[in-house]
Length: 236
Image (tube, rainbow, N blue to C red):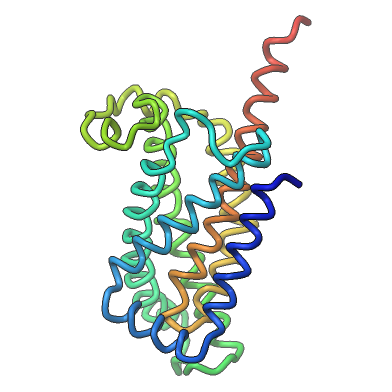
């Protein structure tokens, strides 16, 4: 471990300690309820961006490199975080009417039960099968745009992306074969089933924490893509 790793761990310990202070949860709940979009932006801008920094640390041994674009990534994740809040609102409201068409009778309450798990799973499955692929493609396009603008947040926000080129630069073999077919089915649907079992004020925070996991997953996806590319270039 390097000195920066110990610093990261120390910051995480401090944040956990602050979260455990008396009144912290009530204040967090009130902030989330009063400012749902702003709080969603902040949660994802910090936590999901940290996930990408962590992925970079696993790949290169460093949390930052020139052109990585930490601020541009934070802006991207913040906007996606607001979109995720909207998706949570829409799909959590629509899952129960969907279940009713399959014969469900009594909507479960806040306590854990078989039907509450079914409802959480239905919410997660519909959201991840409909919304998640769109979000993942948008995230990849933003990632490519960051690379084209050299990691500068000013250039990122003021330069119009060449959308046809952005779509062509996506590795669709990895996007379909790994990100869509594997991470959605085996990670995101189960993980967000847990998300929708939580109280509403914790859902976006938990999703942002899962964004750290997403950063690691995308890191391994990029490594897989690089390995496949190197193998294809190897002499036969």
